[in-house]
Length: 384
Image (cartoon, rainbow, N blue to C red; front, side, top):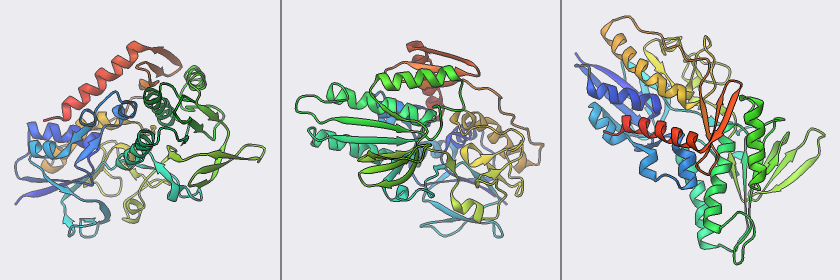
């Protein structure tokens, strides 16, 4: 009798694991991948795509091709619930899907619920297809109405928000000659709004100050220690530490703040932390339901708390694949222990990058080419 392994989400861990499975499949296992998109973006190359350095095809994993290589059935649909009593995945447009084993790699979404107007008017950085749809509207407006002013705001001063601001600046500068006023061109204003005292609070001071200087040099307006209190169709209200309110004109507001988990994960009854992320063991199994795996942003290991970064999702791919096989065949599972430090390469939008490693930092165009090499190598692993 065959057993079923259901994968929900086409994230980085699943992409790596599917490629490994395709090279060495386990007989007697029915593999199914459920994803709401057929082409899933690779987060490492997304800023470069925004800047125009990469094409859509170069930055997206073709899940249909990958699933075919792995011998998996692909279902294009959104998972909206889990029935853990019946071991079923509930989808938006399909009947319930039974599983013996389940693996979740569905990422996360920026937290906007507590800010009035954000859900209606802000464009979240995740899910990425929704973000790219919003970004295309910016480019379309600039192409069709080049004499109109455009105000763009990015809420969130972590690595994602900073890199996005710099790469948006690069793309819009290339389209207009420079960000600012030009004959027969409207003015483009980019705002970066961050509630903290410094950018990239998880990185060292040199990296934070260097990126702050680069942003200001490029004419990007910084609003530090500013909390967004309300979002409107064409503006943002921000509150400073002295409680004064600033109105920031904004035609397009992109939300790149602390990640949160979909509500249906916690509602399923699986063990989660206080932010709704699935609590996992070192083996990437759920602490409460060991026949379920979770990786990437949706997972949280209290033994090894780490930031939500793609580098960990990529490195979880191989141990995830081995532990699928081990659990199904009754063999001992292997722990995955994430590294304490990791090299962060932050693109500055001009084919240069900043490296951040513990207390160490460096900027060089060579680092952008290193990042490009690493990203292309990952994509090569997922293209079958």
